[in-house]
Length: 434
Image 1 (cartoon, rainbow, N blue to C red):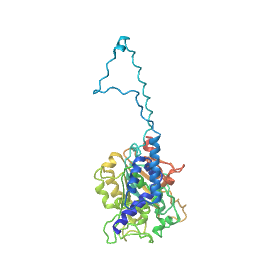
Image 2 (cartoon, one colour; image 1 turned 90 degrees about the horizontal axis):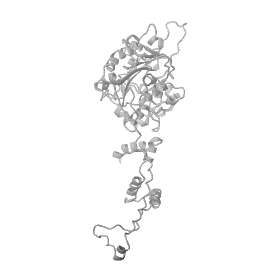
Image 3 (cartoon, one colour; image 1 turned 90 degrees about the vertical axis):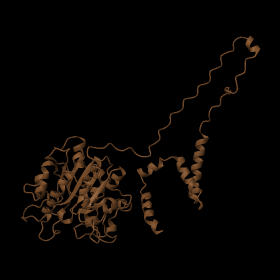
């Protein structure tokens, strides 16, 4: 039984998720095929439960009724002669009375009624958009001015990447902590007290299998996703996939700076139970190899550096750069590799966003304190006008909605709000920013 427990649990979870559109696809299946499947169960040695037997009878009665109401085939009044039975010669009396009258024309068969179209077993694939490869880097913000202002603390981001990108000047966070923004950006689920506190108990932050994420949507649309996480290792320090806390534990960190707070895909049973997390939530070291070819590059690549390289102050080794300087150095190394990749050059979009806020205290305590949740974001693509800006109000729900729009996916939860704006119009409408 132990050998089957894992597959059975996954099958049970998959069956439990057959709601809404997934279930309607099954309903559209053939009644005859369904009857056959149930009949196989009826012929088993163990017999059938009363409910199953009733289902078989109902299905058989429904098919019998369909056969009874079908029109009977027309029967001709006289059989036509066959090649082995020649037609009889006319009698002498008939011959002397003149030519025989012409036979009455056979009644025309009624035209067959048009059949209703049979619904397709699978929905039609959406038309591919101009962007088919999204590279999404999530960092901790030092504050909007520190990142993009007149005297930026991130020279690569503001000095080299900004001139070739579209700047979202009014992108704001839902909270300063990473988990509320990360979960909202990949599923549309709103912040909770537990996610704001960093999930002191991992199991209290897990979403049931029916709660879908962007990763689930991509798989359902036959697209691929990968999450790349720096420093993600097992207890022995070896690179490992989908590293998450024990159910009753809080944040999990590794010696190399990985934190479960920076990995939003860990919090969905839809990814954990069916193996998608183990397959696609991988160490950052795999990114370089995947970037070499278009075919090996996922449609969505979510990239999260370690706590230090993400820009969280107080997490770097003593004597090394930290905060904004560490995050900027990470970008200066990884971004050129992405921009040089075949997938980015073909139809790519790079998003540099801030999923948390950790600004340094102001040098002048008397100076006005800026809103730490206003962080800004950058979009870079061969299909965008370099150096442009967009002042529309965006947030993590907008980030999710925009990626869903680019891949022709339905908005999830908060991403479907009436006030949620999408920057995908910069590609679909051809306005290329302001």
